[in-house]
Image 1 (tube, helix red, strand yellow):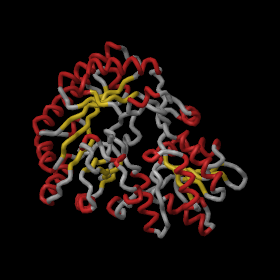
Image 2: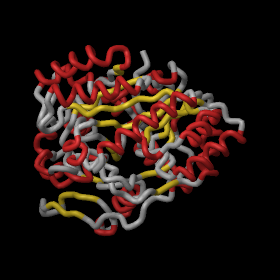
Image 3: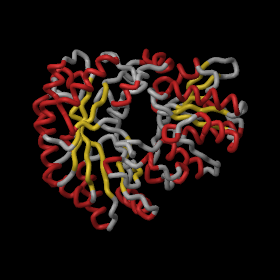
Image 4: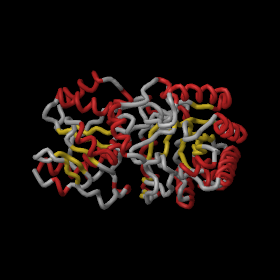
Length: 420
């Protein structure tokens, strides 16, 4: 059955597009979708790669280490490069503790990985490659300066989605199983939510013309639905309005969904989005508890936050767009009383769905968690029911508490509750 959100590895697709532009032969194996180390070993034997890039989040870091070890066992001469969000904060720990991983790439790897391959091929100084960490000839860990420029999204070639095959794994349930893919129209988010790894970053956006051209290609390739993989899709409402009005004129008939903030939508904007094919929007309610909202850096005014959320859900309903409110559970000082207040508030708004995320601690918040992710944490089956659940560090939520909260949520939220 299609999952609510089983995202494609967009970072690997962007990287593959850049590598192909520089005449490298590229293959992608998405073990999250396909699973099984037998598949990994079979692909290694047939492809016999010179370089293997492994991308992971912090919760999947331990699994990535196992992939590196299997790879070295079957292709001992392959250079192994680890990237992904985890490496931006934990690269030195990875290189110090995982002998099978030769290089770690920090931050956006679009340029750095290409430059690293060039340096390895030409035996050029690694000091010229930005954003990498490695062991030098003396076994000492070296780190190069972070990249000074960000990729121009308009310059990216068409993403080679064909490398992922045609698996139904990527078809989101919110689109009723329609053939789904993701599109990134921007990177970064100016808001400062402590739990987000894209927080407090200047927005790097593609042009509307470029976005619409990509969507037209996707429709021609028989895709039926697109989830916009932006941290806050409507952060620039003027740009969003221009985009959706351009989509209306284009004749593109894809269905769309996105995530954003409740204060970043208005009823007129949602009306235009619905006309363009939007059928689902997700908003971060997180909690109604004042102290928790401030700790999360989500809002300094719980009343304003509640008002924005209520208005966004009502406006979505008026415009025929399904809405989902995300609630974070397992917060510091959480009690059943504070949780029930949040559930009650969500129920009164009558969104289409409510989803649960387990509050997790990540290395961008606390570097000391690097060792915990290295060892592997929160591996019980209960965590599979939460966003940010399985494999993450949950400092304020035991497995027993996770079970209790899930029972409480099922009782209070009923059919609105959407589990992972």
